[in-house]
Length: 325
Length: 241
Image 1 (cartoon, rainbow over the protein chains, first blue to last red):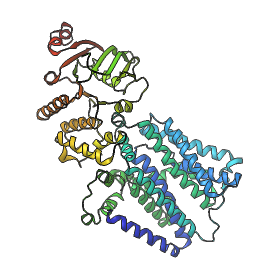
Image 2: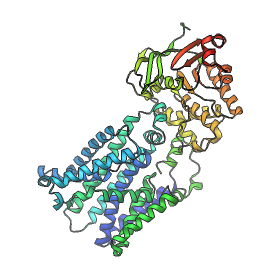
Image 3: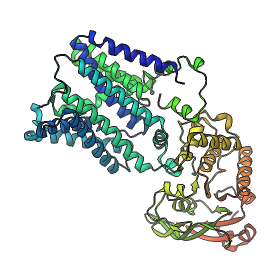
């Protein structure tokens, strides 16, 4: 039997889908972009929060996914959905390779390595302008032939919900337990029989695949791909979103993406000054609420109706209570 | 000893760290049913030997065999899967995970294991180790002695053939140390094989059936405790004791 919060979430999702048509074009665009960041934040939280691999190449993978899809659609004339799928496969494969190369790295070494990779990707895309159109931007085929953004809203919603379900299933499974064990202590995990190298590579591949999925959707929604999609500013924004939300839970990471994206739009009149504000919020979060600002609200929310549902006794539920939720 | 099945064999093990030879051609055989005390002064190479025998450090020379199988190049999780479990000199738990989750991790790595069956076994071992009432606490909140017990419990979840315990009594309250010794004895009587490293001679002598002494990277004695204690090389290495 599921907790009350699951039914509340389903009802809220139904309401959001039913009322989406009431949003004006501007706020619908903000919502779609927030969901794009939501997929990125959740998948980065899978890597950085659950496994402890602080990679700074996540938006680079979004960029790779977007460019792969856009170029394949342009060159081969394949359907956009197939292009996005190819981008996901490409990111999974490349993510696996990066995970393999980084096997013995952690902490600052991993961060610097992945930052270097991210910069190589950005510079390669900027420089190879006969292929990628460089800084001028690569025009992409639209995902839908529609006068409104509503189909994109539904698509983004479906991708976010599907991604969260898949990632939630992963972190609630025995693999999720192994990934958290690796985060806590790789040597002890290995002594406990966990194939540490295999799971680290797998985590990189899966998280990069989701980044590629988000990037592919973004490319065919926004209509143009530029190298800035995967630059350091975007990565910093993603870190801010995930850390402010709470990087050790998927829903709080998504919550962080939504809150930050909404506030960025709300404070748009302050121009560049809104960015230092988020820097200050990030500093305060790290100092006073390392689990993120959304986490306490989320934990209160998941306890809704707990007395009515009763105590869950199976071991799997007991581990899920803290991880997948 | 020869009638019993050989579980782990180290042959001519050499391990160097820069110019320091931590293990210098060490041979060690651990057979089924052994309860070996591995002792030696600080820096004699005991922990390095355990690290090499459990796959956590690659040997620079010699080789490790588990149940007769050559292990060169194999990662530590393969040793664990083959029934070689270990604890660490400084307790290494999954600190932010609960006590129960710490137990579930090794249990679920075993092939064909199911959540409910593993949880049942985990709770059984937690009961045995007097930790059952703490199962929902984060492991880092346990006392030092309880952490040592949990680390032992985590090893047991692998249903290992042999357990290497690296300084299990270090920094442990005497009451919990007695509990730990009692549990090790019970497990040994139940058929488990142990190799226990410690500086606490009294505790080691209380449980060991066989003593192995290391000094300056070499094995200098291996035999029943009374004979080893009378050995001149051992007395020399422990001069002043």
